[in-house]
Length: 184
Image (cartoon, rainbow, N blue to C red; front, side):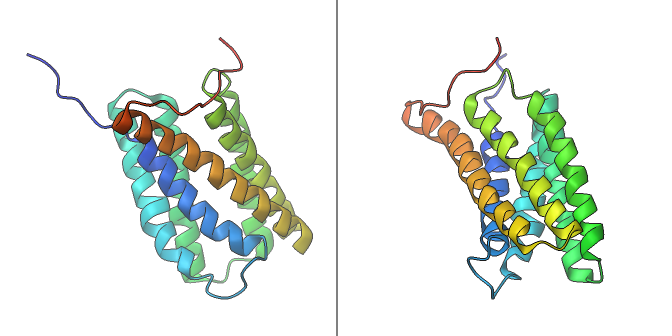
């Protein structure tokens, strides 16, 4: 009896993360100033629910790193959705949460040292994004928030490339370059 082939959940998780991060980062960078609520549906469903599902599927596949990463960032997007919908959260409180996620992401980044360069860059850029945004909110600095938005855009590009490279590899039998691991 052979085991049925299962889809790789990582491209779904990375794509949900990337698209939601890109849209919010455009606003954080100050490139758009109206319609920011457009990110809320993405945060609830594509950034949130899709990543939670990807995390559960990574758990079923026995991938602890993928499980922890996707489930945590899915929960982050659900937190963002609820915090935005309920309102009333002080900027400093949100900044503190972002810095805490930056610390978590920094630790997770160490887990990418034996992975490909695409994942390494995604986590590197993400912890920088969280720290810039968090610090910007803590000290009320538009410049830091804008810088965090721009780094967030780069984060989204790195995540999308990394996730979609797996889709292209499977669909076309061509492996886009993802770079070698830093450590063996």
